[in-house]
Image (cartoon, rainbow, N blue to C red; front, side, top):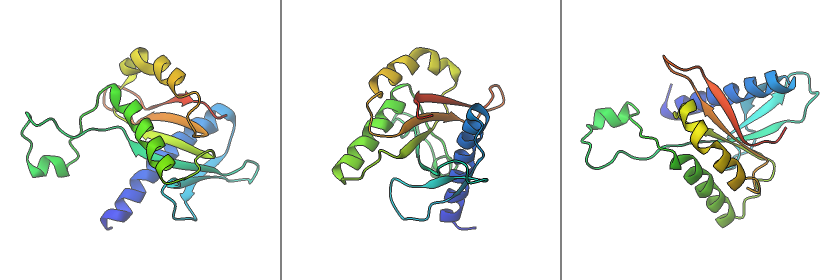
Length: 164
């Protein structure tokens, strides 16, 4: 499997975590499927197994920042996915996506932005209300934060801008 296939496989897993969340919460029956178009704002589609529900367009992005200069990581560490996160990264990712699509005249009104992150529930307590109020008028149909879980915490999805 080449790098591009690995990235698509990874995106598919993250998208399915979100689709499982909305399936459970709202009684949908979505599964993830490759996007039929080659748009920068259309990574994966959510397709209804029974065709009862309208397809959803999903754009995935990571909340990450590069390693601070004072930490000396090897090339191997970086290739193995060492990433640093902080509370500002989620809003920075949203702002950067809005700027990108505005600059490119890309309409994202039907796109659900999925932010892939590694900040646990403690982060939610501090920043969720601020994120929700700041992004209520964001151009995306919805914005959600997805945490994959780890050895001490379960996976979860957080609604920043609800669309269902």
